[in-house]
Length: 460
Image (cartoon, rainbow, N blue to C red; front, side):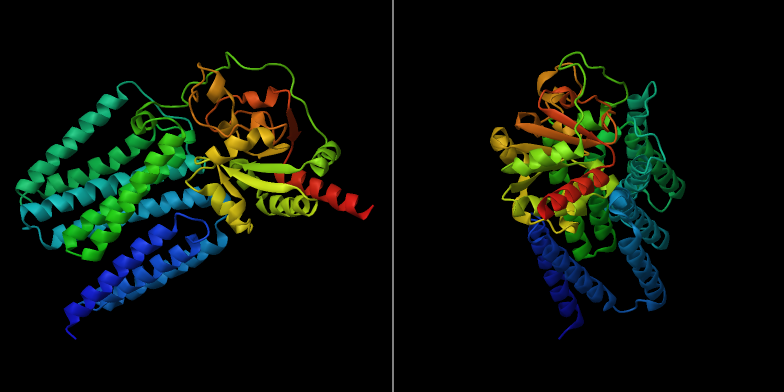
């Protein structure tokens, strides 16, 4: 068989596996198999690429060894609480790779035609923005940079001026790539600066949207690079990542009832917003013993996890408590808000790690329809996604955002370290509701104490 035909067959099979893998990611039940399909597809794509004649394997082997070592280290050592930062770095790595590949092609073939020069410029532009933007997102998520928006006078005008300068560089470079090497370097510099400037005004509460958007950018950069090096499978893979990232970004914006432009340019969270409406008064604390008696009598319980559960690493304890509740005849569910946590699907990953049955995961709209019939809603580390101010307080910055209506359950347990505001910087009105009971302290320890009460109750 002709080598070129074999390579094309491998690329077609890889593209099919990518599409199937992406489709399987729609359901937690098939997500792991989807990852496997995509991994096999990537293996086929790599094998096909290595079959191309004239390749030097020396540096490819070195890169493969280094990449494998880093991957194994990350898989074993990176905590689930640091997974959003890890995803940000992976997005940035994809953007940097696209920038470097496009730059290498230009350096080796500066006399490229206008179309190739245009794709080189797009790879540099999108890759550079993705790289530095992802680094800023990593800094905000890891709290090495301020989580609140960084704003200054004339910020949007400056960003627009920089974008216009970049587009001007792109036009000049495309018209004469061989004679505009300084403009190419300037394009790289401007794209790296733009990546920083477009992410610093975005608040920490919007990080799930930013992570999804940067993931889309990394795919678009890879797609552009595929056109640069004339690699069909890179074009297909990049287009799939770019399109799926944009779709996910739109879904998450809808989940917050905000437009993408509002996320990118509003500086949400820069100014604290005091409560002007909603309940006031004293919060009602609850002891572990009293919480046990309420749960022991409950016929239906829903857990609502948030980033605090990830910080406390309480998912395994929550699963153990759920098993005890089920053994007691209680129906258990887990309600997942689309933007809970600090990256898309953060809570789903945590619960899957603890082997929570997929059929017990319930989406926001479905759980809200039956919330009034549930005996107990247990909020673990979530804040903004259960705040009734989103429904009731028109002065609140989160007003209009769809939330999980835990306040409509018969009893609400809120497990938090303190009464502090959430990532959006908004005080939670839920704390003051008549049917809310606060269990303050480390969530994992609180759940473990409840487990001990159940086990002690069984032994007596």
